[in-house]
Amino acid sequence: MLNPARRDYRHRYMQRLTPGERICFDNFRHHGILLPFGALDAHHNVPNRFIIDRMFGWTMADSSDPLSGWNMFDVTKIKHGTANDDLYGKLFFYLRQQLEKFIDRLQKLSINFDLYDGDALELGEKLKGKLFDRIHVTNLSDELYVGVKPTLTKFRPLLNDNNPHATLITLFMNWLPSIPESDKIRIMEEIFMKRANEYKMNRTPSLSEASNLASMITTQTATEATAMYDHTQAFNVYMKKMGANKTAEKVGLRRREVHKVVPKRIGASMKQDEQNN
Image (cartoon, rainbow, N blue to C red; front, side, top):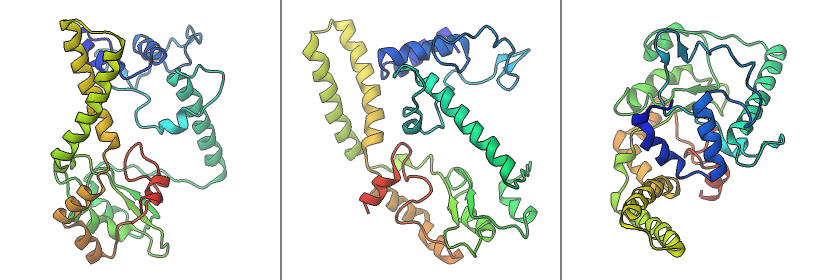
């Protein structure tokens, strides 16, 4: 987690954090234990066998972060006496709440977990007779993976026709190269100039500092541009290019105009979707 060769990558990540968040980030990197900052960890002395191998040590990428994959809007709302910048402490209490709710629901509901090891497109054959209200196929629909047409064709029979709200949820991870670069560059330039002016207001940096600042601002700018840029029109063009709408219509599906299960963009909210439609 503290590979010297990856120091620059960690610093690039930390530059977008507040000073307090950096301290908590660095603390987690040293211990690998998800606890509120300052909590006693002496009794946490049994290695997690899922991430630490006796022979190979830490098995996860040094960029792996427990904050990834969770809704940060919900995490930051947690108030359990943790400091505002202690995101890992907030995540600790948030996950504990989620696990408690999950355990409580397990006791009240009839739930079965079926695990399969095989080609995802063959699940339809193994699940004959079973219908689902929600099917999450992750990024199977990516053109570099399975593609839209095979995914919709194979999983459509598994959706519950008796539920008009039955939904097939997919993620397109690798379509971003289709974004009009001119728009993205324009947005990045605006953010870059704003950030550069903020740094200049403090003092004039030296030549070496200016080089580091340029690299830091560029990294931050790229992140902000991705979050701020509304991809809706470009994504619709991409969907048309992939024949998604035609395939969906052919198998008896349609794209939601307003998302009701997950937001259309990671980090956005479904309320924004409703306002924009």
